[in-house]
Image 1: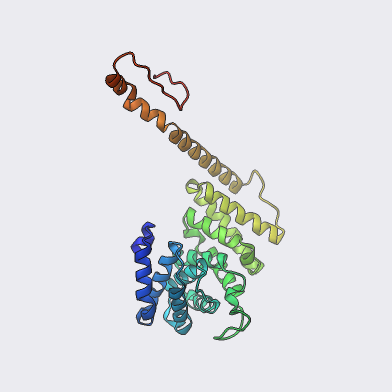
Image 2: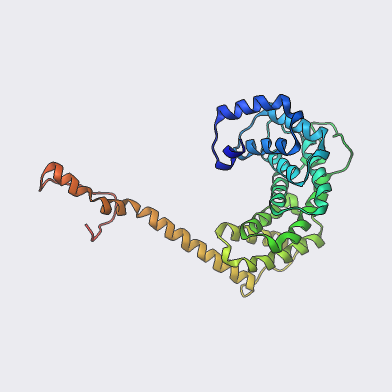
Length: 294
């Protein structure tokens, strides 16, 4: 299943068979296997209520078995799926992630956690399920988790690639996330984001530029900071990166749009047609602008 998910290969019969076989035996799986199973279904956008209910039961019954890797991966999967997902399990993994993240998160673990936080419904980390209260202790995990992950992103920013930096900027720009982050932590993230964006300017593409620009605008709007000015180094970097992205997209579009004509020129179909129909037979060529090569 992991290989299928990594390759984007969706085999419904295989997924159904795996889910049916795994669900009754999940208590025998280690935490990483439980997380990877849920991650595979989430990566393939495949819902399976019975399996997810079993996964959530394991998350609630033994959260201490999950480390930073498995907790962040499972939290990400639960944020993308709906059928069978329990808010109690989301809360358990959010609380566990706070505990294990004190020793630091690797870049991929941080991105899983940020992506989950950005997609979580507002009440998922509050322990509410239906109209009743949740178990396993009180309190709302979401604000503490948001503040912790924002601080972790600021600490990790000097080592993040351009793509990972953009994903972090997008996740932390979500209003439901940013509103839970203290101003002091938000300011630290904003400074780290600006500094790293300049450092990785040669690797920024159009989507990353958009994510970073969104992140900075959202931060400035919330805190009342002045917007970036045209002459600032960061503004120049983002503008140049966006221009490069547009140029690359335009070149690729031109190449793809010109592919039929190039193929026609290379294969010379009119020569083959003339051989079949005899010289002087009419041949209609349509679908592109006149070309001097014809």
